[in-house]
Image (cartoon, rainbow, N blue to C red; front, side, top):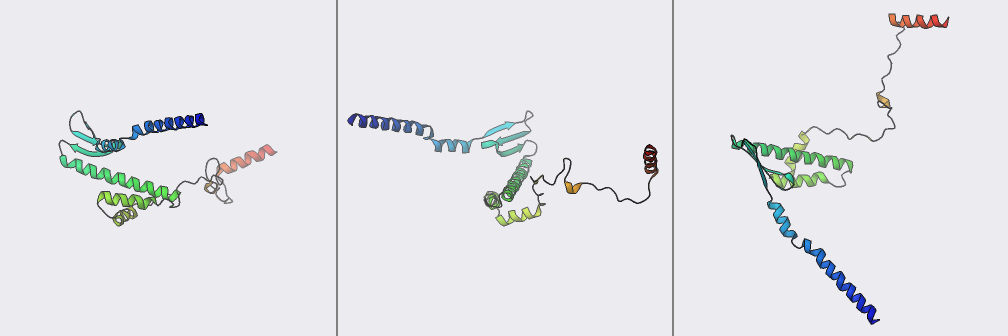
Length: 179
């Protein structure tokens, strides 16, 4: 029994040694997060007229125009509004498809209100001003023909009793073949 016990102890020590090696790559996780937070990359156009500063994940942090420094702030504000609106629309779509189970719209609005220095109510009123989204496409193809939905099939015009010269010609043509 002593040999079996020694073998178990050796295996346990080997296991503990492996655990230490697993933890080593993650020992400085906080440092990595700090470096990523501070990451910036700057690109300037060849004519030096435009400079863009990007951050983590390609996020745009700043845009500068040599000829009009104030224009960069306007472009950034417009860009931020567009990105925020896109995030809200995405949240609406997700909430619609999950029947609101994730309550994503409210979460996005809360984060955006804090980041933009506004209130959730202001953001909600902006959302109401936007045009409503089209309903999601249906995956139910049971009521469709190959080319269109069954309820969209054009109906022939009602028979008016009279006919055009073309109708008369075709009628006479078919009548002659029957004889």
